[in-house]
Length: 66
Image (cartoon, rainbow, N blue to C red; front, side, top):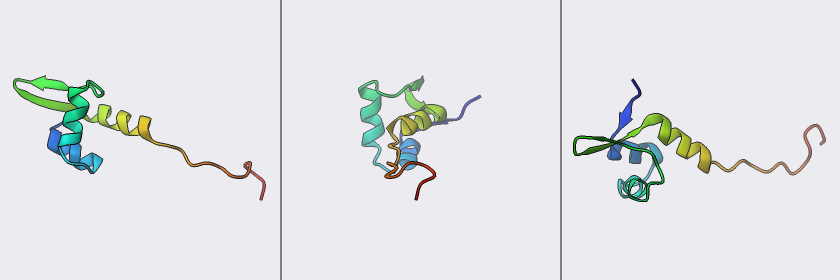
């Protein structure tokens, strides 16, 4: 079973306040699970969100030159 993170735990992983993951949930920009009246974010979903937002560095010179 996959680990489910609370909104506060997700905020700690992202380095934000709890307001940011709550907004992601409200805007349906991230997958979440309802457990009764609680909302949880699957750990893999949070990692996917981070991966999608990751900007790769530019290579100024082609590989092998320099």
